[in-house]
Image 1 (cartoon, rainbow, N blue to C red):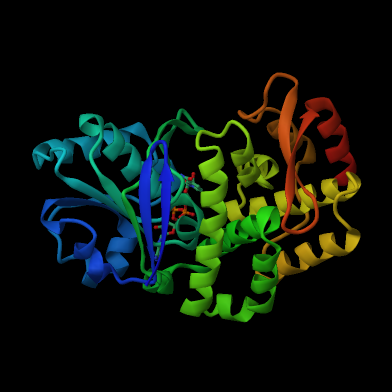
Image 2 (tube, rainbow, N blue to C red; image 1 turned 120 degrees about the vertical axis):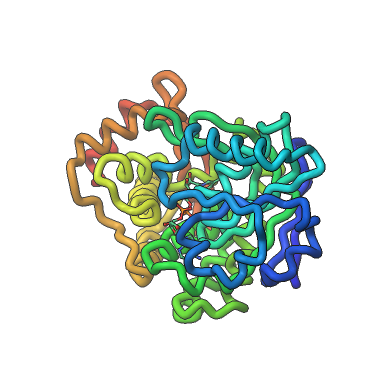
Amino acid sequence: MRSLDFAGNTGSSRIMLNVTFEQLSEFCDTEKTAFIVDRNVLDLHKDKLSLYQRLIEVEPGEQQKTLETVNTIYGRFLEWELDRSSVIVGVGGGMVCDIAGFAASTYLRGIPFGFVPTSLLALVDASVGGKNGVNYHGYKNMVGTFNQPGFVLCDFDFLRTLPYDELKNGIAEAIKSALIADEALFNYIEDNKEEIYSLNHDVIQRVVLDSLNIKIVVVSRDETEKGERRKLNFGHTIGHAIEKTIGLHHGEAVSIGMAISAGLSKKNGTLTEKDVERIERLLNYFQLPTKLEGDRKAIIDAICKDKKREGENIHFVLLDGIGNSLIEKIKIEELQEVLFDLC
Ligand SMILES: NC(=O)c1ccc[n+]([C@@H]2O[C@H](COP(=O)([O-])OP(=O)(O)OC[C@H]3O[C@@H](n4cnc5c(N)ncnc54)[C@H](O)[C@@H]3O)[C@@H](O)[C@H]2O)c1
């Protein structure tokens, strides 16, 4: 077992890699545990989960990440008379991690909680960093907390049942992490593409470990996203706008966002044409798109309405070579012009 520790102002997490769900009792008192589980995961992994009585089934899908779902969860906590000695474990993708972390952080002003991430995106990103929350009135992650899970148990066997479209979302995030902070990880993903495709556990472990290390280093320096944590948004300002406007999968939208941001970095003089091509080739290998197709104006308008803008400016993440990034404060007007040129 490999493990990683994260100690932040909002709590500490131990992340255990390549362990099995059956080992859960080594990390928490399963007698006192209530599980919040994605229904798809429950259906596909009944053998692992049906051993436990206190299971709250959450319907899959981003549209379930709401206060209404949290309300139902609180009802079950009350019914089971959970107290601060109880433990909440979220088993699912990023949606379940976010909602389980939020329900646990707010019920009785906070019950200990942990995650068993079952999607690659949750493994490389959503389960670590302490952001929990729900969507509100159609706005993503508008209500939430910063609070670290006590533990994250990574059992790669769950990935066996993950549809490829969902796997791609995690691959895009791992490539993002490599691009902003770790050239060696980028090279490793390039050299081990086939093994990632076939879910070789040793290769997946290295990709998860390195991606999480990057997230941990960045988050430790800026837990509440006032500066450096913004780097994790590389490709996401454009990606979110694409996701919202033309409804692509998150990973596909971020992939286009990263390709456009790589183009912007080239224009900025901090990335070579050769590196732009290398990035696009790797994304395309995993069937992640790099060209924008759709209503450009609507997408650019959505970028300019990003909730992370500050007045007339937006913090935009650019690459300074593969494995390095910088945050530029760009005037929305300027960004608009460049995007019309580039897209
Ligand atoms: N808190 C953070 O730092 C952070 C970071 C990134 C993303 N997020 C959040 O994470 C969410 C996206 O996460 P996601 O991509 O995991 O989406 P998700 O949790 O919605 O899961 C995607 C789909 O995969 C299915 N699934 C999950 N694991 C499976 C498995 N092992 N086998 C079969 N099906 C499986 C789910 O049922 C669902 O249909 C978003 O809500 C996003 O806002 C949070």
